[in-house]
Structure formats: C-alpha cells, structure tokens
Length: 210
Image (tube, rainbow, N blue to C red; front, side):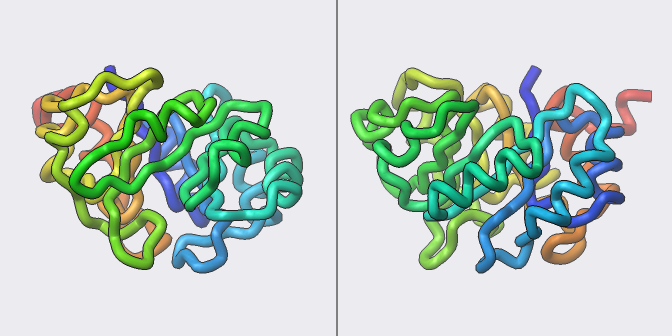
C-alpha cells in the first residue's frame, strides 16, 4: 500500500487530523520564502503532541548545514527533505534518513540521482522560481522509463482527482501532497485530506469504504 505524506503543515489541528485519518508522514517547511513556512519553535510545539508511529519530515531549501542540523535536533525530526539545488556532497554529509527532491522537466538524469546517498528520490514539477508547492503536475511517463536505485516518492500537482491514476500508473513507494489538499495556502481542507488519503491507499472514494 502506498504511503502518504501531507506536507506544509502549519498548525496542530491540521497535523492531528492528518494523523488521525491515515497519513504516514507529515512535513514541515523550514524555507522562509514559502507561504507554508513554519519556525522551528512552532514546529516543535506541534511535533511533541503527535501520536507515535508518525514520521516527521523537515523540508529545507539550500539551507546552511549547521542550521539544518540544529532544527533536526531541536524539533526531533525523523527525516530531512532537501528540496533545493543541493549538491550531492552536501546532502551526503547528513547521517540520518533523508530524501532528495528533483524537479522533473522532459527527462531524468539517473546518473545524477545516483550521486546522492539518500533513502528515497522525490520527483516534483519544475515550476519557474518555485521549490515545490506549485500545484502543477508533470508528465509521469518520464518516470516509467527508468528503474531507480531508491524508492520513488511522487509529488507535484497531486490532488483528489488524479491521485488514483497516479498510483495505478506508477506504483510509487509514497506520494507527497501539499497544495492539493488545502483550502488556502498553509491551511488544510479536511474533506480533501481524508478523500486524498483514502483514494491513494485504496484506489477508491470514501463512500465505497462504508
């Protein structure tokens, strides 16, 4: 069964709802230029209230390594997600669970991916000037053309309407959604969250689970 990460969490109410309705992981954006940015102090307050067995992911974009390590320790993160232009030498220097995001255009350079010693590859849309959260998708066929050395996490424009097709076509290890389950930037829509998780994991609407 595909795993689901709900990213861009900014408040405890949203975090608890996602956890209660089947999210395997929740993500916090520590990138100040993002409308979903959260401080380490606020994220720590949310994380300490979370139930067990939920993975907590911290998203960083071209951040100073010392600051990443400080936030990782302060908040008690489980996984680091590097979503910028980080070189492999930088990413490989972190001794913990980590994900590297790659913005997909017309093709994927597998040799470049293999330089990163990470636990999963995340494929996102290549939107000009943005590091994720664009709400746009990319041509999924480009992923089917390759075999990857690490598990694949699919992101980029996923929502309640296309998630079943995405999972059926690519069978990714996990899916990552943020804007596709929001009512406004940084605030989740509970109806969309619940529907997205059920459709991702079961390939059907919640009305068919009763």
